[in-house]
Amino acid sequence: MGGDKKDDLASSREMHFPQSVHAAQGKYAQMLFNELFEDYSNALRPVEDTDTVLNVTLQITLFQIKDMDEKNQILTAYLWIRQTWYDAYLKWDKDQYDGLDSIRIPSNLVWRPDIVLYNKADDDFSEPVNTNIVLRYDGKITWDAPAITKSSCVVDVSYFPFDSQQCNLTFGSWTYNGNQVDIFNSLDSGDLSDFIEDVEWEMHGMPAVKNVITYGCCSEPYPDVTFTLILKRKSSFYIFNLLLPCLLISFLAPLGFYLPADSGEKVSLGVTVLLALTVFQLMVAESMPPSENVPLIGKYYIATMTMITASTALTIIIMNIHYCGSGAKPVPQWARVVILDYMSKIFFVYDVGENCTSSQSMKEQDSSLKKINTCTKGNKYEGAQRSLAQIRKSNSGRNKVPPEDVSNNYGIRDESCCSCYQILIKNIEYIANCVRRHKANHAKGVEWKKVAKVMDRFFMWIFFIMVFFMSILVIGKAL
Image (tube, rainbow, N blue to C red):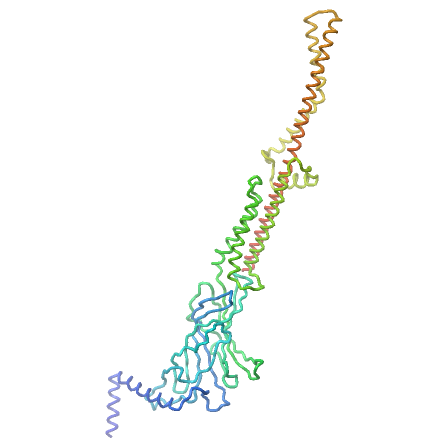
């Protein structure tokens, strides 16, 4: 009876003083700990029968993606790893310990499954973090431990910077086979409820799959759980810093054809654009792994650099045509018809001082000048004889002398005057021929310059179309 009264008094004190309750639980916890670990060994599997399979449940919570090293193909992630299993030797009746249903003890005191990350890429093989475990009265152990893992990830950069990556995290026991320790995933996917959004990657899922693999070294099956991180790159940074500058620079290449040949900067513009693209190409190559798969932006750079190289080579050829000069052969007939007659009208290329409204008037002026030249050439002797007859008539009216004197005096004068006029006409013809040859040579050089100008405009539009379709192709593959 006295004992019953003491128990009732103690229970009444616990109701009024909660701190004494915690003190009592601490007392029972200490007693429970001493009894549980008196003969316990953490070196062996905690099963009553050695043929019994110990089931371990694994749950992964992805907290943050710290880094994705494409060049070294290493994914660094911050994980919360939860492992749950049952220990057959760590059970108790909670009623005997004042209803104590769980205790928290250091994890190194109990047996722990040797579950490791198979595709670990870190050279640090230290022990797991010795966080406390939660031990329940029925022998269930829950071990939550944070971990920063570096895992190997096969990075496919074919569509960089519009690529998606799938990185695996494979967990399994290192020494126990499937007949001793079996591993299960508690959920169909990793837990992403506490995931911190990354500035470069978007998380599109983390499915979990259990695999049972038989390796060549051993005949026993080895189960593992593989979590696949589905990542998609945020491409806005690369669009504004790599793709858009390349696109703007590539549109400068066709404008080199529009630059006048006399400026002397056509070739230097192409070389400058080529060097600028080379710098961007090196920036992309430094961040990409040495793989056979060339990234999409790298293909765009190479295609643009090839196009600029071709445009620079064509510019050199066209400049040679522009500076043909008077010593070159005349423009071939087919080039005169195709380039000077048709293509010049299509691309609106005219001579200096000529436009689409004045070309017909210039042709009419040339035809009228030709008519005048032919008329003056056919009547030059008639004009000279007519002037001599007028001189004779005027002189005969003033001085009347005998006919024989007139014939003698004026005959000498007529012959001298005729010879003077003939010499003058020959000199004029020589000067006219020189001017005519000079004009012909000048017209030949002008025609070659016009051919070069038409070819400049033709290739300018061709390269503009090529740049446009290349840009559309890159954007289409990205989408």
